[in-house]
Image 1: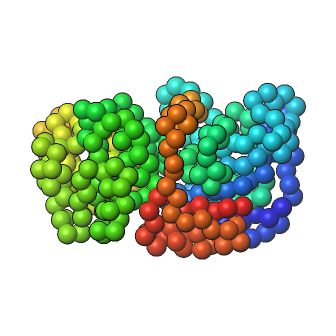
Image 2 (image 1 turned 90 degrees about the horizontal axis):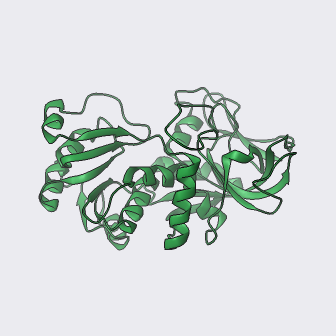
Length: 325
């Protein structure tokens, strides 16, 4: 089978590997689509915290069950499946960072993958493989961020990456008001078309936190923070009294939070670690019920996987960058 591996020093190498055989409790998946996250860009560039040289990258993928090992009861050949980000976090509270695909385990950027049956869920019925491949990390992270919000809440999302766009969609499903930040009028128009009530241009308005407080009459009850030191100060300014700031992804290091101001907001700070398989199944039920359509920025062929990474690294995408296998 063809597969990409991370080169020493960064980059991708297309290689031939044997098709793996599923052991007891495992299934062989013919991969049909994968998607990119910020973590994957760092892994392939060689700048991630884990050395992934020689590893097949990408944590997110969807495909068709080709064969099953002994004792498999959750799936059978022909089933459409999508992988979970945390292969062993099934239910309950976060158990800690175990072995993940793309770093400690080979990922999905290959023609076939062997996975434990417990680390897969069915593809929501109405979604294509390309849409399903966007769900494991970005969608479930966004679902965790907005969980518990409703019509009385205002959710602030930053930018137009996969997590932010999914958070906008899920927040609107919950009836919450959404305010977004972006850097262009074109993107602002697309955010409004998805349901954002207000959009703030963070380049034209560097102090966008105060603008969010003005627009919302007191701040956002839930803030999606994706920047870290570069934006955390503004998130603290934007959060409502008693609100929550949800920290997501590979945040920029450094100082950036006025602790005294945060204290005076009586707000809470929460780190998001994607979610469990149970959370994933609950999210997929909502996607099916509400006919939610993931926003795909661009689909690249398997042979053009390096171009997909270049598109992602350029930073102009709206929604998810996907690779079709």
